Image 1 (spheres, chains in turn green, yellow, purple):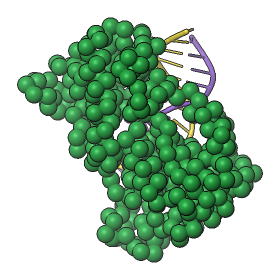
Image 2: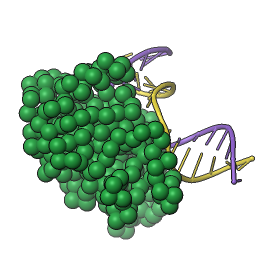
Image 3: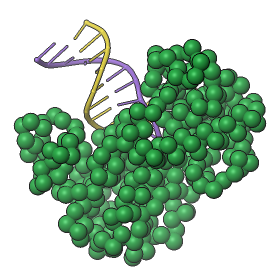
Image 4: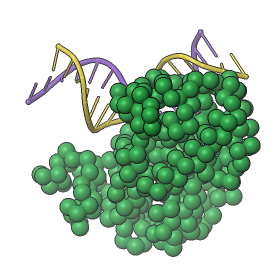
Length: 315
DNA sequence: ACTAGCCCCTGGGAGC
DNA sequence: TGCTCCCAGGGGCTAG
């Protein structure tokens, strides 16, 4: 699912191709993706307003804040996209679908979720059943939102008020931003009684970390996910701080994690899933040097946590 | 002030 | 083969 490295990859790639292009049109078959502040907007009236705000606007650049992709428009607005679990932004020759896309898919590809790049039809490149929103661009290509579970949120807000916007206003410092170990510790200690796994994933404490990368950084720093924040020794927290930076950078180096539906804007899968040591490794031997543990799965705050009970210490 | 649990959603896997 | 049930989960929200 898109966490910091996936969102970072997306915004970096989009920033290479979108600046200077003009949005010619917007299409959606699922208006519930659109939000105005906290409110989910289902009315056609709002879609009209959304369209008015973005159609005709030139894209200035693309950046990121936490897990949000920010598409800045020259007209003074910013389109904020949160991809949630299965959403991702694609650039290509996507067009709005008329009725069921299945009918138009060549027999050999029916039921296939992803069409290999080499086999994509130049006319419908690529065919993706889960595209629910498309921005047509002046280059002839389009920017499309694909989202199996339809949780992604899109809103448009004046760029000046961006930091005050719902979804951004309460975000903590970026996990890969310039913040020192001292600040890291201070942030975590805002929830002294919290379980470390949950606190790491709390976007108001630190922005950008989700389930996959929190499992991986705890595995690396040998800390049990249920450890109480206030009980973790300073030395262990330092390891965690280092692991956080390393794991997230590695995620970016590998083009993100495509264990779930994530794809880069080009449609290519990331490769970080090949580097997992804990996440979704339940039942497999722990790969830490000399460790004889088996990866276990438990629930922490309603989310699954994967860890090795032998080398990851419970504080 | 907490936290556990529901909700949004749908593909995929397990079980029958 | 085909049906039903359950699970995945970010983050907002509510009930306790």
